Structures are given as structure tokens and as C-alpha cells.
Length: 196
Image (cartoon, rainbow, N blue to C red):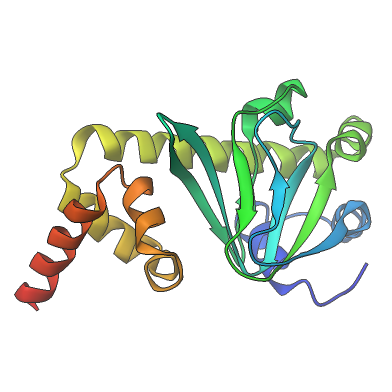
């Protein structure tokens, strides 16, 4: 596997810094590179999520349709992971879609390859657990934010924690991610800029 996977190295170092050299090599040997054009889908509603997706370059979003509108669930960009967690665990169809917002390079870790190495590699098992823990924590934090924070608090948190999303994603997708109308997002942004 190529040695220039700097963003994926960053993910590993953040989640499991004590991984052995052997475990690191095994992990990289399981990955398959894929390039995506802007607008290309990684999976659609009704597909099974068969890979953990590591973003090396570009930006993707996960979304679903509700009442005829698409709602952004998650943004993934350099150094992050994309997964439809229930579909991946159960190997059953997902209701989510995943598409590239920019030309992107991703590395895919196939479910079958991962499962076949969990029992034989402590490092792969530990890294997988830490990836899932991180994903669940992120999901819980987003759910709590939607429950307890105002629209402006949610926007400010996104601005502080994920400025790349603010810089690179279309405003309509940001609004749906924050569960706001585009008009509410415009008001929140105007209030923020008027304070500055």
C-alpha cells in the first residue's frame, strides 16, 4: 500500500497511537483506493454499506430524504471517516446516501476483509473498536446539540469544530445538517457577522 496516506495515518494516530508496526502494515494492506468525481455516489438508499470509508482528499456528505427534501446527516473530509453504521454492522440496506461534494480520494476497508482479520489481529480489533466508539460519540454529540442548543449555538459550534464544512459545503446542505431552514441560517450568519 502507498506510504503517502497522511490523513489516514492521522486517524490511526489519533484513535490508536500504540498500534504496532505489524498491525499498521496489515491495516494498510486491507485498504482499496477509490477516486470519486464531484456528485458521484458511494452508496444509495437501499444499498448495503460494505466498507468503512477513510477520506484522504475531498469532501463527502451523507444524507437522506424526508418529505421530498434531502437532509444532510454528516460531512466527511480529509482525515475523517464515513460509515452508515447500522447498515455496516448488520450488512442490510441503508436509508442513507453518500456523495462526493468535491473530487475526492477515499480508501475503503471492506467489511469482509475487516471481519476476517478481527479475531487474528489484536491491532485491527482495537482500531475497529476505537473507530466505532469515536463514531458513536460523534453521533451522540450531534443528537445532544440538536436537542439542547439554539440555532446560533449549533452554527457557532460547527464554525469552531469543523470550519472546513463552513468554507466548503453549500449553505443549503449546512442548513439541513443543522436542522435549520436556509432563511434561519442566513439570519444566524448575519447576526454573527454584525457582532464582529
